[in-house]
Length: 128
Image 1 (cartoon, one colour):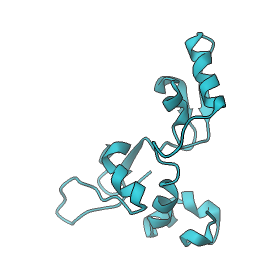
Image 2 (tube, rainbow, N blue to C red):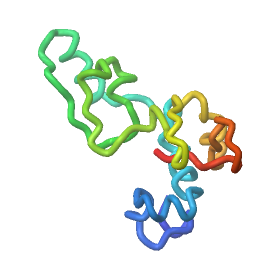
Image 3 (cartoon, helix red, strand yellow):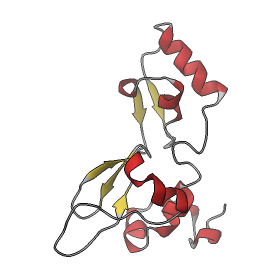
Image 4 (cartoon, one colour):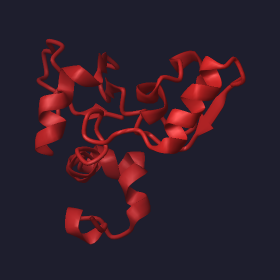
């Protein structure tokens, strides 16, 4: 998947908050490919989990947002997600936080999830 195929001029726009606020659809079209359950941990992820099991792992710093370290068995408390995680989302307007399972159907369809918290002015898009 390239940036132009999802309506972006530059791949970095995918994680630009201003671009997201203007049109979150490209992010969610991309996110469905990385969403929890759509990919599996690699040998490297399983190795980190093995280090944890043997008491040899202090912490994992990752730039990935896929959460595969945790799926492989590394405790959430030992993972530092430098660029966030797809394991939860937050409404850009009311700040309501939701687990990935609550918006999974929308994300897997590549559509923008809507905040389910009742609001007078309508629904708002969720950010990552």
